[in-house]
Image (cartoon, rainbow over all chains, first blue to last red):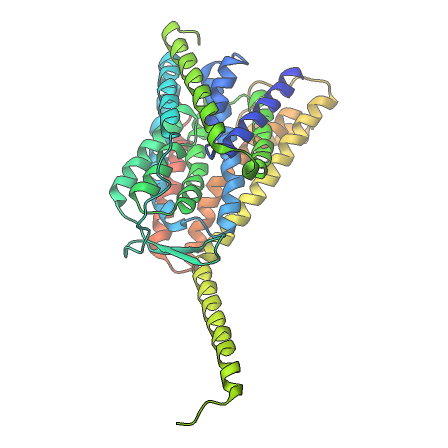
Length: 271
Length: 144
């Protein structure tokens, strides 16, 4: 009972932070579950993937309803992300847990780095004749038209994002969003919506593998996922009232601590 | 050239504005409509899946509290889920909630295939079917 409540609260915390920073909950959830609750890394990964599916479906429904998702592009890139998830998921169940902790530590370092002040998006958002589409900008009410560039590069990035997602139980948006907005010519809003849309099916692909191998512990995954869902709702409502710059700096420090914790576990074999 | 009457001067800018407004809103409506079929299907499937799975999970946890039991730590075999639900066992509802949650994006993909077929967009129906095939491969190979 106590554990259930603790997990629910951890889920709320990860959901709020994730929504405020625009990243999935997995990056925050896994270090908390291994560090605070003392779960084995593979159980933490199985728990995280369930939360990732829940938040992706909830946010996905909102974005698709607003017409922000490039449905056709995401369906195409899903070929690469699901193949990656298949490879990553099977690797995760076979691999040494210490190696998983080490890889997770490295991904955390990358996320901390990717949160630095990046240029918001590519300036030349325009139709390219390839998968051109448009959406109505929610702020201006004007249609924004754009097309897709560097498609093969995008497919490669999607495969990598899918593999990382399947291997480590995170969504992989930290890889896809920068590629889609900086290199593929998608406006930021569309990049976030489209990346998020792909995450659900990517995570489901590896979740099936984890489920069959017994890495999904319902007593842990369910209270956590329900907490993350609630937390993400709270976070998206708080969004406008929080100074995101300061929050980002605090979070970067937190990520470095998490990364150190994960790398320490990897080296000492405390899994 | 006759001077335009004062009526026309006042009326025409408004009229122009009105016509432009209608044109741009029909253009926007058309842009939205192009994607609407697939998006509508996807939108509704995601919401229904999420609501059903959340309800099952909350009910399962409530049953655990009602029976004063600790939630289970392992999931039952997929074939055992329905019998356990019939016996009102919490583990059945918790597993069903998890499975519906995992199935939601998969069903979304399957639903999109039909939506693309309905739009007669065979290329994307094929692409989406291929994605579904990869996911089904993980189901079949996942046994380990």
